Length: 110
Image 1 (cartoon, rainbow, N blue to C red):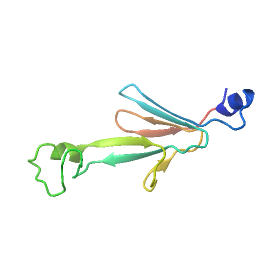
Image 2 (cartoon, rainbow, N blue to C red):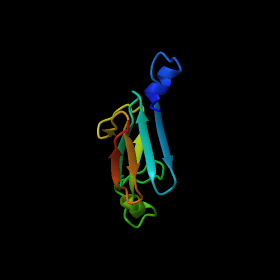
Image 3 (cartoon, rainbow, N blue to C red):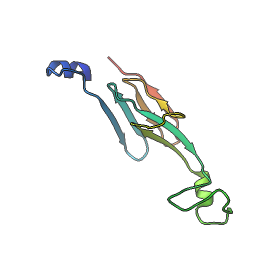
């Protein structure tokens, strides 16, 4: 049963909004149901990290610099203040991210 049908069946004045995210450590799945936006972006390497105290001018021999430059990830978020550079998932779409960081959009099924 779809979210909109379930909301209507219970007498809700409007359709609920749900963003779901799950992972098993190898695959990440995120689904957007309803009007609340859900975004993702790819991050590849960085030469600065406020948390680790790394700055762009630090030499490669400094602990952590090379690990930060090799880092690759996919980040999923909602409620962004500045969505520039992020990809918005269409309503009803499921995002899958494999261990090799391949991203796929799966359309909703009726």
